[in-house]
Image (cartoon, rainbow, N blue to C red):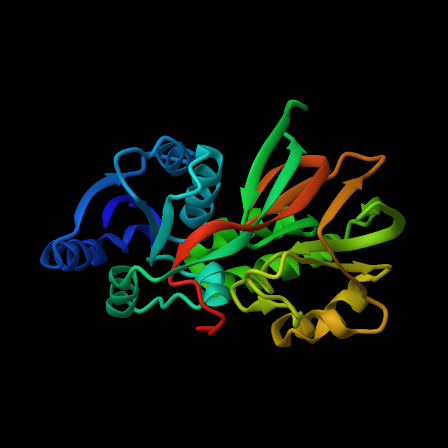
Length: 306
């Protein structure tokens, strides 16, 4: 293995750097040739992964934000032979949980050194940025329209003080109180569908949304499918009633929830509508999302959930 370690010093509110020495010592003892680079801000991990050279493995050392930037950069590098590894040092390991990658530091290093990889899916998303320009990116977890951007913005701020699960729960409750509804026009694998008064629409390549929020879905990392899960027509009280179902995962099976598997979807709205994917607000509708089957060569990818 010849690796590039992309390390986020801000993960886990800066406390994750204490793990680095153990990982670097372990790699040295195993005879691995590697280079470590610390990120300097949002988007830097993406740039480093996209321009990765003179290595066969790019390792995301951070939380889900770092994982997503590295994943996006690797796919946009155009080098299908690059392998992706993860040494997780964040607080909400949704990507690792779905792909069976351990988050215990010693176990994570052991899996990385074993170099066993498999090809897994990712999703390509085309959307509009804050000035209306078209952007293309990739994600490994989910995209949310409706509540998603507000929840992400608040939880990213409040987790620093309240912790992961409590900060996210508080962000969900605060967003529920606003309860802004949106009418959406969908084109799902070529078929049209209108979803009125939508509270939230999830386009999930991963059933774990964030910090304990999840969806019980028949979904595998390499099945070439994603799921659309639409909550619509709910009042504030109605949303509060189904909130426990987001923690048990049962909300995906509720009879009045829109649920459909697909390979590609386009979503439009007459009114401006913000979107979120993989934990951060990104831009606005319209969006087009398609699954890229087995496009990512992931070390440690497994159907065994952690």
